[in-house]
Image (cartoon, rainbow, N blue to C red):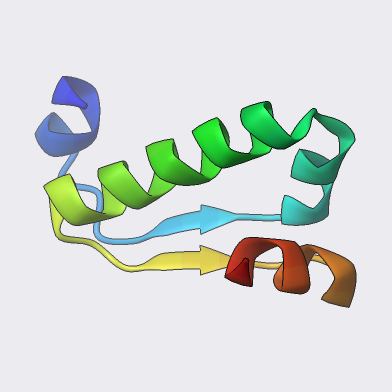
Length: 60
């Protein structure tokens, strides 16, 4: 968090977010909560790319 603030990151881009589906449901939720927390704390947009299946998993 400190480093991202120090570097003045403006956007968080995650490619192939579909790989999060490889983990257990609890690990998926943990990861999604962490990236949401980062986006909110740093007040930056979050951009993810991946398969439609990953999009559906993120929305749940």
